[in-house]
Image (cartoon, rainbow, N blue to C red; front, side, top):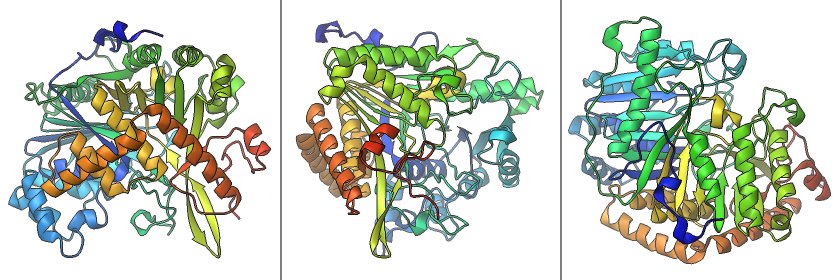
Length: 558
């Protein structure tokens, strides 16, 4: 590993795509409630244009739910003053405080009605792997006056057979952009609703689907970007949108023009928008973009003390729909990432990894990736420096506790409390090479530490969701009342005292996870959400039921 004195900013960045930026700011938004609430507020107060490009979209999905919409009883005046302070016009406030739901289609239609240009790029996914209905979404949105295009750029015989357009991006007026893991989506089977709170309740009326059940709890992370770096997210949208317009010879009036850079903002961050775009997907240069793989490989080579990761996958090999690791082909980018991680572990670094116990696909591929890492750094396992975790929640029904896994969809990395990234790119062949992705990478010690502490505080059950949102706004220099800011400052100071040392924080995670496993085995309530991530062999050693496609925490359906 490198010594502290060898750190240089150019060792962190990708080459050949977006520039490295300063005077730009990032606000991290943990879980769907915070991300979708913040997006919705910016959509409502937009003045010029809104652009969206997502992996999927549910027009009827409510972006804002519960008391976030109209406030708690007796607090409506406070909410109105907050909206006004954030830049809402009186008409915007009237819309927000109205009786209609703040759904995707209602909010975007309101923006169109007041003269805002709204463009939505919908991935035209294959029916074979369909998680939403793009044609139906197109019809619903266009009927409300919203301009949409179906993007079929991932289809063709030269493409990866299950390639997807996986970015989750929004741009508002050129000054604010959003990127990360959160789509405005409820998958068509009624499960996997992206709106969720950091409490991740087992069941809640705020997430009830048409079948009358609550979808799996969903943990995610997103980012708000301000300043010149927001223009790089817009450039990505413009390139993709205009490529589809020109390829399909659509009306030239649909083309998105290039806008001037937004104003600089006060920020100590150095950051870069990085992408994955496979060959043959789009026609704009360069023909292959592997920026996410580049920053991952540089960041993992730079590890000195620790790395904290959250991801949906940890695949050593490429996945083609069959959950048998030896059936997958090589994934050079992931092989390099795992080599770099094992090198850091052999040199004494520590690694904490949050994974879903029950991913949608590929659990055996994740287990194979972990097995490779453990085999290459056995001393890290023996010394407790390599810790994989999963997340769970519970409820009490009919006199006993019931448990279910929390789906981990966040794509987060924090290295040495110096560098961090959030985005759409998963730790697999698709995120690194075979899907269209976008991440934001940031070199900022204060921001990196605050992101790690916030996530660990959630998983340990140390703070409620409202406090996490207040922390996010404080760290990102967003509007807050004096009282909220003071409370957030005190909370951040307290959490730094508990979790500021990453190795101490990792030990606390280990203790909580294994305590919760004992509670699970004794049918007792969990404290927080942390549990150990267990392979089949480990689960069976603990006497736990294990199904390869479901993990060990999911209760079988009767």
